[in-house]
Length: 200
Image 1 (cartoon, rainbow, N blue to C red):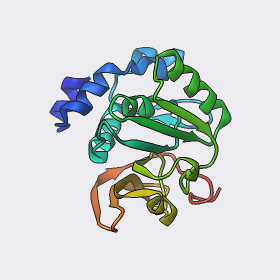
Image 2 (cartoon, one colour; image 1 turned 45 degrees about the vertical axis):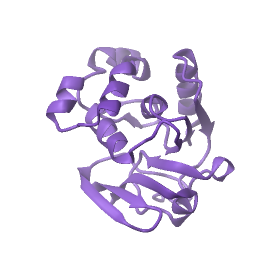
Image 3 (cartoon, rainbow, N blue to C red; image 1 turned 180 degrees about the vertical axis):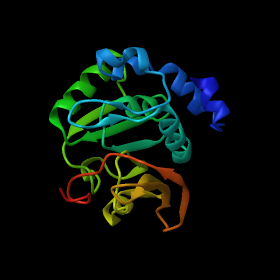
Image 4 (cartoon, rainbow, N blue to C red; image 1 turned 45 degrees about the horizontal axis):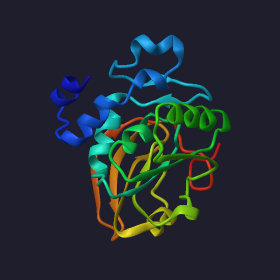
């Protein structure tokens, strides 16, 4: 998988090393374990998905996570992205709105020894103030916009990485606390639901 990611342009060696250390097969459904390292999204419960490895690697690369960083993940899903971040950051808070997914991700991460990752059940579409401020925030569901509340929960030099657009297609966006923005190409995610997400 790492060789494939390099061929696709992932160049951050810390990210590649993190991806190589995380056992992706632990985060997919038992019947999908043989496909765990295919470069494609796979379904999980609650009509959600585990993102394809390239997208996980690219979003992580864009996030530029330092080893002393305090990170928020909006949309924990299977826990896989949180595990990758846990390999890179000081600590990670991962918030998931589906109780079943939150409990399952928490159990897997604990079993695999990720003591620096905490999974919270709740709506983090507009951030998670109890543990703010954050050095980095990653949103792992399609967002209509980057909510101002997310930016308010960043440290002055912090950034948010999120897929922003419509329900059909989004661009990966890197938004800095000071308002600067970069775009990194088209992606497609399941929709973000909640206070600052798409309405059902």
